[in-house]
Figure 1 (tube, helix red, strand yellow):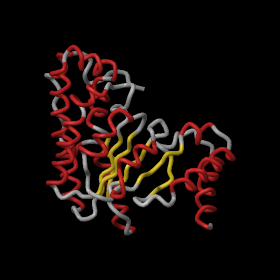
Figure 2: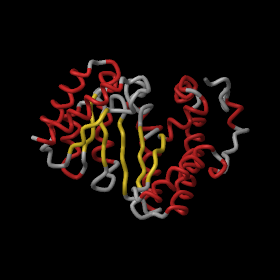
Figure 3: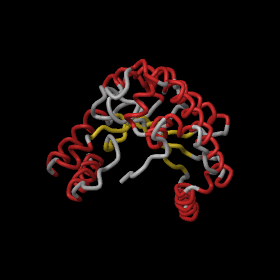
Length: 257
């Protein structure tokens, strides 16, 4: 429950001072998790919400969308601030745990349609997403996962052509996005993950989950670039255990074929 956001009007921006990432709750928790990964020999990496999502957390989606029209300079100012903070945050993780094999996972729900128009995406999202990735390339990061939550049909050219992350980057596609068109545009350099609807996973029957999962595997398992069957977004907390077991059973049964 959010009782008060850090930014509730245009004047609050002037008083906003980005904290030292090392003093944040998330940095402590992520560091603890990464230490466990090191102890048990697992790969290193963590999830970073998109830059737009971070300013939405600060000001709320309604205010950010309003400012995109009425006060665009405020949105750009906040994006610049969050971009610098995010780069610094990731740099601290890399300095602590090393750069070799370190993976970064992003998700882009607030960049989807119909929340944003293609023009708004072009102005407020694409330039900052590109700059963030360029900064991470400079820091030596080469492993990425890009989750396109929601419908991204009208901006697929950016993700598939302009962003051009390193080969092997995994793209997770939502069931609302034209999966066939997107995976075709991505080509053989990028594995595609998805796109079992989390709505079906959380609200459907176990048989529906099983059948849909098997159908996805049957259709895409021979994709040259690779296919990972997965929910199209995070698993809702109220998802019945039986549905998760049905999903796993479908993948296990398909692997036996």
